[in-house]
Amino acid sequence: MNRRKGSIRPNPGFVQNLISWWERNGRDFPWRRTDNPFQILVAEMLLQRSRSGSVGKVYDKIFEIWPTSRDIAEAEISKMEKVIGPLGLKSRAARLKATAEGWAKCEQVPKNEEELLKLPGVGPDAARATAMAMSWESRPCIDSVSVRVIRRFLGKMALILPDDQVAEVFYSRVPKDKWGTINWAVLGLAAAICMPQVPRCSNCPIADDCKSGQQS
Image (cartoon, rainbow, N blue to C red; front, side):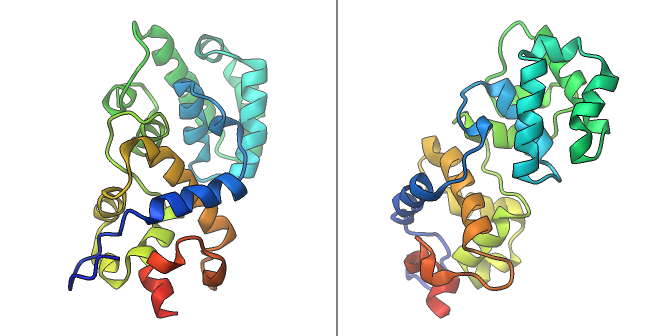
């Protein structure tokens, strides 16, 4: 770690350790095996307030029935509600349909966070996460799960910073083309090792660089 007093900027050496762990232990979801930005956007919209495992089943069903954005744009909303129903919040069916309609009307495929935000139904979290996954120009983002891991990693000083600044500090030491992978790796770490109550620091691939881990 950078040992300057008051500094919370991480040493960039943690990146490869985390990626190596992720490659061996990362959970496999279909939206992590595609470079189709629309499919990733749909996943990110569904992942808001829903578990990844549950989203995986619904995601597969959606693209089995409606393979393209145009298919979703033309879908019957009642049928979409039934497919999305297991996740709760059936209103997301209408949002997805509106997003697909906007996407289908685009003359060119959106290629950055700002263009995604112009689509109906797309919020900043889904837009930024999609841009990160595609390695587009965007600001870094963290959610309510990954922020737990990152605040612990950066240490006590990070506790007083807003989420956006925490993300900026953490991702300032991550190569831009690795943002998406690191985002998924952090989420995997949150689920498997950096637990809410009792983190398993002895099994953590970045414990040596973690401010909280050094204190345990």
